[in-house]
Length: 377
Image (tube, rainbow, N blue to C red; front, top):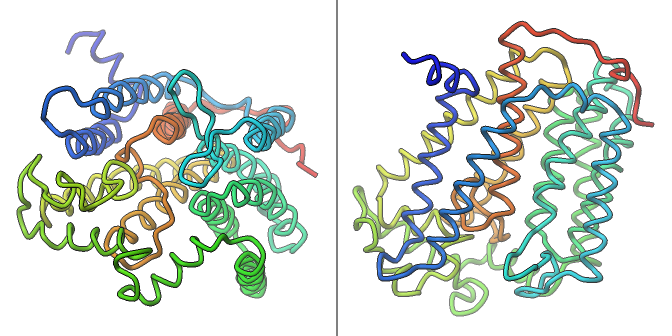
């Protein structure tokens, strides 16, 4: 093998990279109309190229600097400021003020906030994992999550808020929590859900949840999207209708088939076997992350990788769940597949960082950082 190719392949995990490309291409083919110029196809193709470039670039580095409290808190603070700025200059789309828009390009900062929260919690728990049974650390880490959670809920973007909560809960569990504190965490979650229902949720968000409980109550209104999605998934059969021949999506019976309901559109065209193949690619990605975490150089790298795994798994479970009608429609993208640049860039960056950490762990590169054990009080 030529030296240049050999050096290129050592930059990152080829298995992970290949699985990513397969998912990205599946999404790109699903959203294309194959009829003349398709702006979505063109834009998504460009975002895919940028995302893969970000993955390759970010996988070349080690991330010892993220163990410094000053840098971690700066990242977290800047993104909190960006989320707050949304309420002043954010673009309103479909009732949510969740986007910045510049020259026709939209950017959703909550995607990067998920990555920032993973970094912060990995730093926090890596210092305190031996004493995680202390309820104080659960409360403090919960406050770090709660601030962006509330900012995102107020946009309102319930789906992203749910992911932030899931990241925190998952990383708390991975860090090693006692059973009594686990019960306390779920009790707090129930309390937050109750307060949110009474004081925070908008009428249309309540309608989505109620429609989940009674799915056939309003199939022409709030239940229309979920109803059409289940039809699309079921109509795909074993082998699907073929690429570009999905009637539910191509004839616009299924709304948002390029974003929230892209799995349903994909399953209609590729069928059950195609859906299983897609899930295999996602499994490979998540499996590789679990391997990275097991061989990590330090607790920080392990917790960071587990955090990214939890983040992606939550997106996959919720998005596919709402596409097949078993969870409420919350409007979060399917990782590496739904249309949009913000989530693709955040996911590509996060996966690249995990690959970079794995590369340096495998090479036996050990290091110590002066501020590694400086806490985030």
